[in-house]
Length: 267
Figure 1: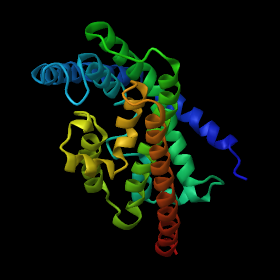
Figure 2: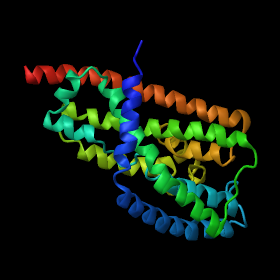
Figure 3: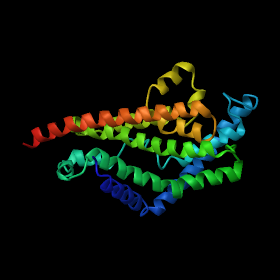
């Protein structure tokens, strides 16, 4: 049985570590708000041009999508970068393997701890300011909020479990910045950062749904805002769990293979 206590401590350590960068968090909040209002101008104009609704989005629901997606920018990893990539490139990861901790689980829970702190100075204020300035339509029952909160944490975890795959590619490539840039371009687009993926043409929506990226941001937003309810929201959550299991399994296999390669190189 896996001892959870060390990983809970790593989760708390990640949370506390990120709390040291409060000025950077404030800068992130300013960026969130700036681009949030730009999205308001563009997407509200799109809804009005569509006669008041576009693919089921009216002004209120579009506003909810905009501000929640902006609020998640500091918590969902869409950059493709985590510290592990540098530790693999420099060889410091060899020390990590000597510790009585699972490198994959330890890395992901630490990053999730940092991401959860970012919700406080960046996520919640972004949503609150958006709601106060332009308004938004949100559910009036507790169900979407409860499942949405679990879905949100799951989405954050999926993002780091996926970025972990980018980092461990360094066992073979050493330098992974090219993959990080590719990840950054694809993840933001398919996660629904710029526009809801339901606005995509059908063929592009199919492509997006074949990737883990909507499970990071779009699905939690759909559940939290009540855009999908009942069994449909449960179905989206199950899709998230499936992607999380898949990313963790692939990460496990790549870690085992990468460790063997590291031992061969290190003698």
